Length: 280
Image 1 (cartoon, rainbow, N blue to C red):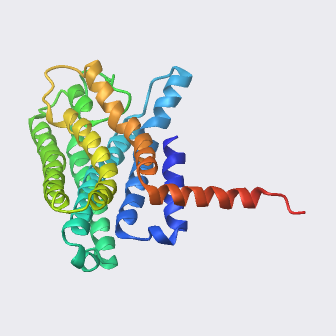
Image 2 (image 1 turned 45 degrees about the horizontal axis):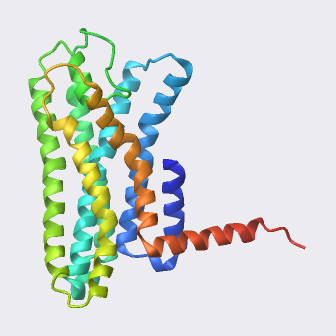
Image 3 (image 1 turned 120 degrees about the vertical axis):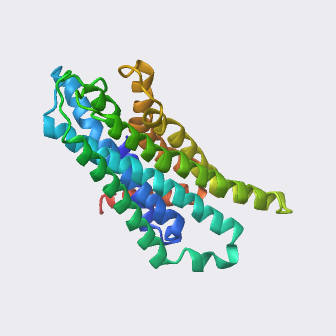
């Protein structure tokens, strides 16, 4: 469902010229990072459930945690940039085309992917020298930093501090920047005299606000909250929210609450039906 939904969303945006705008360019990147995120964790989980052989190789585990944290951080950065895009569109409409010009959008987005990769590489590099002799059981359904650190018999104080610090920067700070953008957006919207104008402004922001609030609230918890013991069932459930539920939820939210996306999907399905129709 996640792969199909995000792929259809990307296809609809790419094939509809009306959607070739900065907002939908960022939405394509959000869908790509969602597809990457769920492809890293879920296939292995499904294999373990199907074969009842719950195992992963040592380097396979480190590869999984490296790629997943890359996707996790990149998604938080993209959501923050999307909030800035909505701020520029609503609060600075006369300068929007200059602020969100093509070169700037592409350059910033590539930088966000690079920052996410650099952060993941740095933290995984600090994880590799640790000794793992306490246990070989990862108390989660995928390899992630908090449960892996619990398995180490080395000093993990530096790793824990840096992991919490990264969670503050990429979680709480990004969430704060997103909320700041929406504070100025709401202030501008309430000054719009017409009800129709307010409704139109809210409709362009509501989808992103729903996705961002769900993601930041669940994604930051496991990295910034200190764990005295092993992962609890609540921690695993929260992990499930931002690894599986969010990639499924995002395309649904953007499709149901966005008129332009719904029209693009209808147009795409119409083209598909015409292609399937037999030639007489």
